[in-house]
Length: 67
Image 1 (spheres, one colour):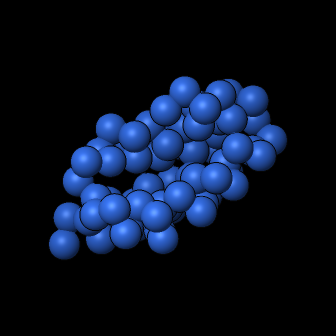
Image 2 (cartoon, one colour):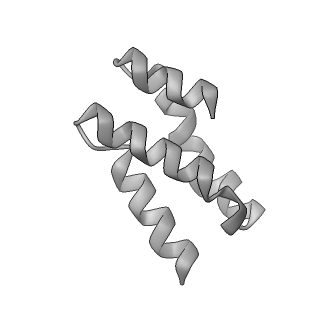
């Protein structure tokens, strides 16, 4: 249950139009990565996270590369 709720919240956050919200979603994923199954990380979280490397905001792109 926890994995589903967190995954949904983080995916919603990184789609937010407000750049600090996207950054918070990325940081949240990084901090809680140990709570997710490897399959969930690979199939649900990594594809949208990889798209964040092309975010128009440099600060968001930098957050992805740091974490």
